[in-house]
Length: 353
Image (cartoon, rainbow, N blue to C red; front, side, top):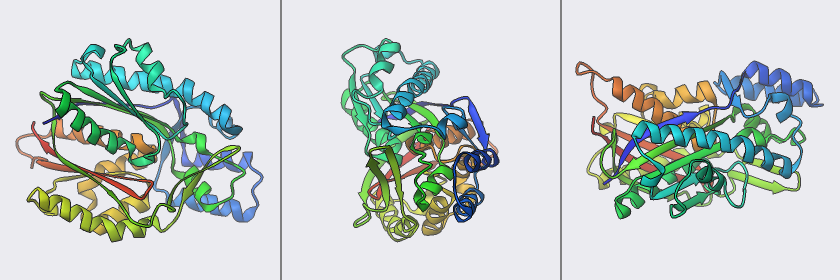
């Protein structure tokens, strides 16, 4: 048995509205009228108000090549990771010496060694801490990391830390005129999150988790790695694949726990895009109120890939802590991550507050 003991998030300092992003992008790039119209349409349909970036937007729009992007990730991402992890340990009353496993997830830049190495050194972690860096899980990495932490904590009976750092702005490619590139530039933001998973106590108890790889969908989400860097692969059929697959996967998972979808009080859905949340809501027949935390994070921060669910979870835990005796309690929460594959990760939590 393991518990979510603390969740913290952190954002880089540069914040922009969608209008700011649109003006800067159209000024920086020599797009024709049709391309400008398409990008404006993606911005308008995103339902995102603002996003945070690791660099001033003018610098992001001038980034060249994988080397430059990797350097930015190493420098800026390290600061965010240290901030999120230090805050989570402080909130949970955990020290680096208490942590047995450190899980690090990001798909922003494939650094070797991963960013967790300098982070551990800055925070003076013991060299015996087991490291689990993950890259290829993409947006679902945060949920996968939490599922793994649950298993590792059960095996070691010691706390684990899960850290996610995503500088999604680094995937912007102004010369890429594909619909996927425009969509990514309209929805992705930067941020970091951390969760401390404890064997003893916390706000939420892990009940069960499961993974599911939707057949024949590997071509729908991912990256094309080219000489100038990473290019987003994102097909519009993702939403249809979720509508087809998710109801059966969720029903079977919950049936194994002898509960139904109506027994879930809170749905912590990956805020990948407005279309992703709407598709999941439609497939599961849930209203916006039961997944409002996902909508709030999407609106306020955009899609921060694997870090997004930490923001959703932190927002949910804030509401959970403020629930009074006169309010209906959130007894059960289901986290649903979505990422390349198309991969689904489900985690069932139970409120112990």
